[in-house]
Length: 433
Image (cartoon, rainbow, N blue to C red; front, side):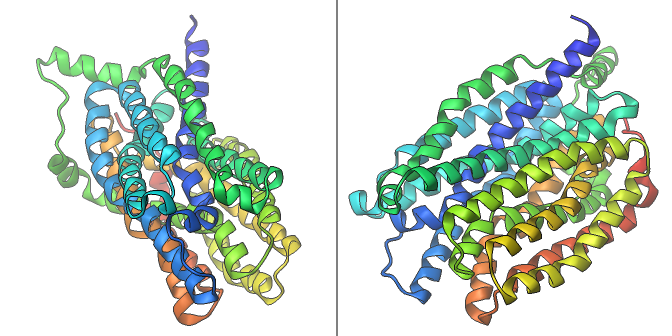
């Protein structure tokens, strides 16, 4: 097999596996407004409806407590045993957690055990997802040709958005094919069953990955010196604390974008703005597709111009546009305005996402790349992402302002922009060995 063929197969395997992995993790967020009644049957009413979402988004957020733990342990494993071994482990754990959610009876059937089983499943999901970003990104960047790292790196976030796209598609089909009563009774499980059925495909694909030359060279160098590639979390923190802080800042912007602008879209639009569920899923579907199309194109562009410039321009424009476009939507909520908003946001999102993963990989040398990215990614996601939906819903409840999500996203984007400014031209550097 030629080197080029091997790289293309690795690229396809990484993208498909990553998309399936994030579908399994994010589909829980998509279905929150539907399945909250299954596990937290609270009487109807505006306040109670918000409380219901608070309970369910809290369960969603609890899974994020395990993400830093999974990020560190799986990151260490990936830097020692290889990117392939870690990615197969991540997918296997995700299969276990998804199976638990798929078969969990309702609160009406087994009482408090129902949300407890879901809680355990979310903790396992959090652990496995914690190692996904650092490991998959390391593999993509390390196997990329020097003049195509922007394009290869762009597929990390494209894969995540593909997962979101598949999830939005599953939600759209479910709401289109079944009545509200059927969805509430049993049809909400279909997207989870679909995820469970495609897990074996992801495991098979990832088992066929080939380890990157960069990792194999680092291992060979250590073997020649008579040492093993062992890096502790303490060493990574001491050696790369500046890079980890910059990484946390960049991830803050990516996190609020994914978990509020996209995954919270259905809950916000249906429960807060009163828009129809099926049409909102369709907007989410088209918005995700828009980002999937644009991100690799911007990735190609980033290999020709400055990644540092693209990073700062995309975050800056994203930040200043948030309040005007959301105010316009809230002033007269409609599916048409929601669609226009998602298209505008999608351009800035795709431009930022196209360089985000590549820049993150530039921050760390090979021996701590998976670990360093995992720490940065999961700390930021825990703080700003895991309970983002909970905090935003609570803010809406307390302030009675539907613009609360806008302020939250703007805060994360501002942190990311500061990190990009501090990083400066280093964003255009080659990845260290």
